[in-house]
Image 1 (cartoon, rainbow, N blue to C red):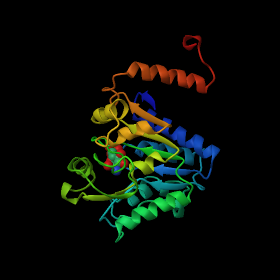
Image 2 (image 1 turned 135 degrees about the vertical axis):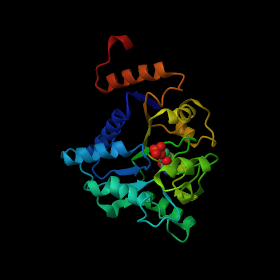
Image 3 (image 1 turned 180 degrees about the horizontal axis):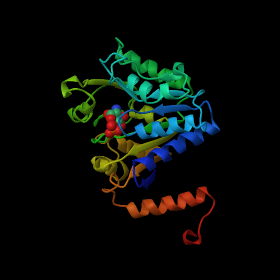
Image 4 (image 1 turned 90 degrees about the vertical axis):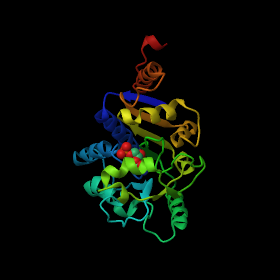
Length: 267
Ligand SMILES: N[C@@H]1[C@@H](O)[C@H](O)[C@@H](COP(=O)(O)O)O[C@@H]1O
């Protein structure tokens, strides 16, 4: 697990956009796993900027989003379909036929989960998965207690998640109680993961993710089992980590290795 502590959300967005850029340059028809919430917005803005500057094209990519509320029509202002179309897909050259989200308005959510898993498998699996983290340590909508082997399925939201997300709705009563979400097992099957977290409100969850035990009570801690995870943090989100100096040291070394300029200090 690579823990990268950056100055602010802007630097996180640029670094995440770099990872997407490198992948798409190497593999124009990459399969991207995308996330919603406030945290990835800066990354999406940076990707759109790079697209407008002619530096990147999404025309051949396929995307799968992590989750969708159940009970909101697709065109509801707070559905994740609307979020993705407004904040990313409509602003660059995505082929929206290849942009997938779970179907939260379906009549059979259990079947919708199975269908979604099949679609991901048919696309060859996800090359790069973007993640945020909930204040209770959830990833996607895998709330505490989710099986670490779970697949895409229906999930009940906790009151904490509903209250965290109430800021996007007129009142908490309007926040859905159910969602269809990729499971922790589905997320662990992706080739590479980049998780973003900024702000002091995420510090406890980040500490539990990086340094706590692997437990279903902190779904994000399952990422410790994945071989290729990068955690991009701002300083506020990193404050509760006990090994900050070591993470910074390793990151400096890693950057030098990547640019093939390892200084004598490390040898
Ligand atoms: N389902 C989403 C998660 O994917 C997201 O990581 C989390 C944190 O959102 P934010 O980035 O707004 O803090 O919110 C929701 O619960």
